[in-house]
Each structure stands twice: as structure tokens, then as C-alpha cells.
Image (cartoon, rainbow, N blue to C red; front, side, top):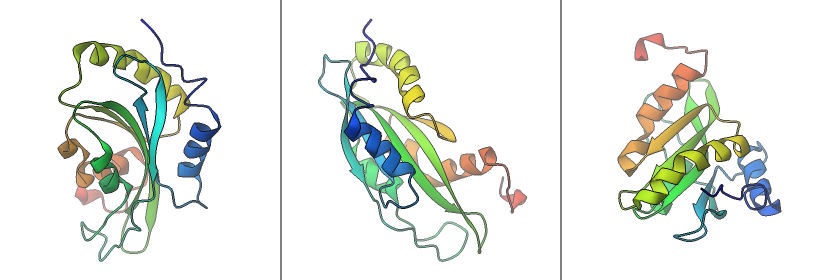
Length: 167
């Protein structure tokens, strides 16, 4: 079984810079996407980055928001296995916000069996490279990337929760 060539590809200057860009408070980039270079290749390449839209919070509850999580859904394909690293900003209450990072392991509905089998091994390597995240989100449908359950999980993982009655 071949290991993904993360040292050479995911950590090359472009990939490393993309990861640092998503993590930087000075950058508007809030997500990156790694895909396999080809159907029979184990090499991961940076295929997209994005800025999403600035979050507009009308109340601290679920309201009118668009962010990298929404934007990246359009990049995920049913015949691809991908890894996404996303900065998620959410409201703790009416006055405070938190930013956390999530790692999405995407396995599209039409991904071949051999790719699925190799993915678990590759995921361990990816997690060593994209290592600073609060939660891992396995997804095979864009419905798995619904914002509310992800933010609920982030709140549970994040320590301080100012509205304990919400979960």
C-alpha cells in the first residue's frame, strides 16, 4: 500500500503556505482543499482555497451566515476523496465569537472501493500535517456538513459554553 506523499506535496511551499494562510488571523482565507492528483495516484495536491463570506450574525442563534463551510460544499465531488481544512467562526453569545478549525474527510458517494480502503491510512498522515483542529468531520454528502451540528460539536469540544441549555 502506498502512502500519500505528504512530505513532498502537502508540505511543499504552496501547501504549507495555504495551511498557514487558513490559520492566520491576518488572512481572509478560511479553507483549503486537498485532492488526489489522479484516480490511481496516492499523491495529494492542493486543489483550492477560499475566503468564504464574512459571517453576518443577526442574533447569536442560527441566522443569516455564509462562510467557508458553505463555500467548500461546491468544491466537493461525488467521485472524489478529499480532505478539507476549514476555519469556522461562530457566536458564543450576542457579544462574543470563537474561531475553531475543523478537518473534513470527504468520501464521495461514487468513490471506488480501493480508494476508500486506502483513505483511512492516508487520513492518519494528513492529520499529522493538518494537525491543529478541534474536530474531525467525516462526510459523504453535503448534508453531513450542515452548520448547526458542526458548531454544536465545536462548542462541546471548545470548553467554555455560555449557554449550556443549548446542548
